[in-house]
Length: 174
Image (tube, rainbow, N blue to C red; front, side, top):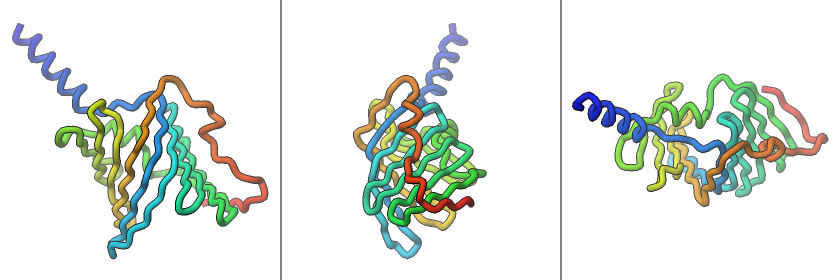
């Protein structure tokens, strides 16, 4: 009996101390970037997540931009510059992997260390993603806050996860 209780306690702790992502989610987001000199830039838009690796950020303010990734490649479409940048990813913001490494720090607050960076993740009372904060490679503090989060089952349509741009845009491969 003692072993059964101990196993239940350990299992409960293991499941309670990890963040589970749904098969897909959509949300509005605000992203605040603060540089070391305390200058702040605010962005906002919509984010789409599907199938563990597909992530699309649709920036609406202050400029229109789309950022799409499949975990291997990153495509950045800057509509103001009429430019598309394509990068292979060797390290970066991998939400699935970051959340896999998250450990409970305090009520609704988790901490993860991924590729040498420390991420602070906050969830709401239902365990849904509320915010992610970290320092980027340039020592900028990045805070992303999610609002109107909608979790779902199944994959989002592939077309909705792709960045759209006119073929006339300049293509830069990085």
